[in-house]
Length: 325
Image (tube, rainbow, N blue to C red; front, side):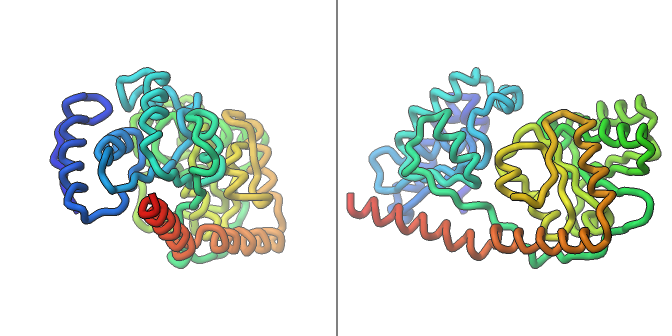
């Protein structure tokens, strides 16, 4: 581990960028490293520029929908560039990257579309989730549908739609509660929405917990109303626990859940309520069968030993290609 000791953010301050590149280049110049792997724009810029005329190959990890229009307000808050400037910098410096590793096919397609990356330079390797730390437990059951939402309290996660979906269920006479596990800047506005809708007895905000499996065990279904996602770790965790998932109708979430998920358009609270009501109406036998199928899919597609093996294979292939060059 090397601490670069850079003050400031490289994508906000040219001096921080220059300092980070110089210090990382010094580390790579020792000849001890064949590959440097980076993720997110700040680290990508530094790592790409630091490898110029060195024998170290650069690999970019693509972990979210690249410069997706839905994510632009979020990106604008992270750095001072306009979306077009950030995309241009990413596209130009991306020519210095030997291989891109995308965590889903949806992310790979986004990078091809927005950055013009050739398909043969992108390898998809999903992020592994250890299903061994989770186990399938019987759902709480009973007359109340216990709904869980997990994620940062930020616009991307759209917990406000989750709150409105619970309100919609109430108007239909469906007894449901919602727990939102997360922290972030939208906490006060969510609390106000809950109060305005008179849902204080049905919706609660809790801090994230280290034993996430306990949260899944205490709830019947995961509600995942994100506006955009690169993967959706909480979805895979819920699958490993055998919990049904109602998610936004996004390509990436179809990729993760296959035909085992229930989907609604982004921001459409009544449709999310429809899907939650469907889950509540499942028989015990159907719920058990779905739980087994969800857990098996999580094991088959997101086993960390397998995803690690595939990532190491990418690194070995990159090293061989650099050696041949």
